[in-house]
Structures are given as structure tokens and as C-alpha cells.
Length: 354
Image (cartoon, rainbow, N blue to C red):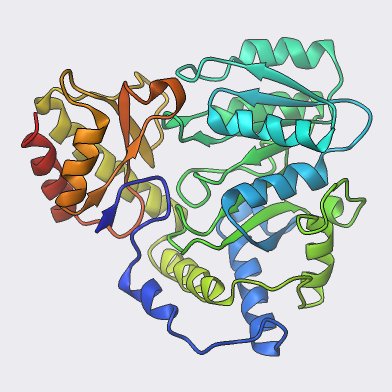
């Protein structure tokens, strides 16, 4: 079965075999070394990350990493955080802060629209904010938000940016200094091609060494950081998922890093576009698409359920639209172990229905 959903991904054989390594207690020195190497490699994915930032490993999904980030780094009192929401995951960050009882202001846009940077500029000029929170790759639609322009605004206004990079880390460009990033949250089982169970936050060291604002015991980044700096861990880590992430990071580095991975994704997405267009299926978004996932308009007379079930019978799993978009589109991601032959078979299977 080939997974074309936005995580988890189809594993390479190399990463799958890494799961067969010996059982290991997370309190042993062997795991301490493994954890240290993973943290170092995560900060080496992007060149400008290593010096001032540190990676904090968590056992949990990408959402756990996002909640740890916003819970620990957004203050409980004082100026509100500004959340930019043009999809499910921006709304999710706003919900996290509301549940934490933290001051928050939400600047909402249509799920099919890019971020309204003009409105962001006016909002930042008119009020003080503790941080700006945004989603890099909003997989609700496959939108790649313009974080370079947003980061420039944050730098100009001297407001830290917290980024949900769950579906972009390792597959799209991230510029830590230029974007005024205080932290970004991500996961092992998307563009890094690991397995579910391990996520992480890459944040500024000076912030991690400061005061935590977390309302949570388990998702307090500062606790994890202090313990991991001592080669320990406050709670049980997903050891075998860590084996897989370690191997996936090595595989990515040997393959040319995030730039090569982005190029590969672009090639795959272009092949899908070329193959779907003659079938009368075009991209749902006109512009601003990521190379990692794309949404496509469902052709007239074909429901998502029909398409999903047919493709699953032929060896592929795809994803529906979310919320009010569920009857209008389907989504295809190109992460993981996919070949040109796989994409050809997928296009042939879709073509047999249209």
C-alpha cells in the first residue's frame, strides 16, 4: 500500500529495517547517544539553525509538538498572541491558546486564500503582541503560506514568530534568522520520512533557558530541554521511532538534504499535474501551492468516497478535503517512498474512473 495522505508516509526499506534494532531502555547511555545525535542532526537540516537554536524531542504527534511550543513559549499574561488562521491548523493553534486561558487574537482568512499580509501589517502597527503564530504549509488545502514576507514583518516589528512547520520541515525552505523565528514545531513522519511517534520543537536556546509558560506537565518544553541537555529525558521516549528518525535523517543528508528532497517533491507534483489535467482534474488552488501536497477539484459525478475506495483497492491511500471542502476536493501528498512507476499506476487508476 502506498500512502499519499499527508503523513504518515510510505517508508523506505532502510528506515523500515532500522525498526528491527535491539530493544533499548531510554535511561541507558546508548539511548542518550541516540537522542543527542538526533537533536544535532535536526539542527543541521537548515544551515542557519545550528548556532542559536536547539531541538527538543517529544514522544507524540506533530500536534503535541505544536501544543508544547505554544504552551511553553506564549506568555500567560500581558500582550496577546496573534494567530493567523487560513486553515484547520491555524484554527487549531488558536484553540490551544484559548484552552490554555492565554490572551489571543485571531486574524482569520478564508481557507482558500493566502495570508492577508496587509491586514497583518496593520494589526501589528495598531497593537502590541507577545508573538505571531502561523502555519507554514497549511495542508487543509496544500497552501504554502508566504512566511518570508510575514517573517520580515515580524523582524521589523520585533515580534517573535512561532511556526507550525509540521508539514514543511525538511521539504521547504525555512530561514530561522530572517524570519525572526523563536521556534518551529515539526514531526518525524512527514517530510523527514520517519515513523509516527516522535515530534520536536526547534527553538532559540536563550528562550529555552528562560522561563516556561506551560500549563502542562508533560508538554513543558523547558523540562525536556533541561533534561535532554544532560543526556536524559523526563519521560519515556518512543525508542524505536527514534531509531527510525535517526536513520531517516542520515538517509536525507546522504541524499542531498532538504533542497534535494524539495526538488524530488516538485518533480513528483509536476508529474501528477501533467497526468491529471487530461483527465479533467485540475489543482484546487490557483497559486501558492506547496510541493509536498496538492488539493485537486473532484470531477463532476465522482464522489470522494468512490475515488478513495477505488484507489485503496488498487494500492493507494488518499485524503479527503476538510470541513466544508470535503465535497469539493481530494488531496494527494508526494512524501515518502514513491517511484515514478507508483505515480503512473495511480494516474491510470484515477483515469479508469473518469
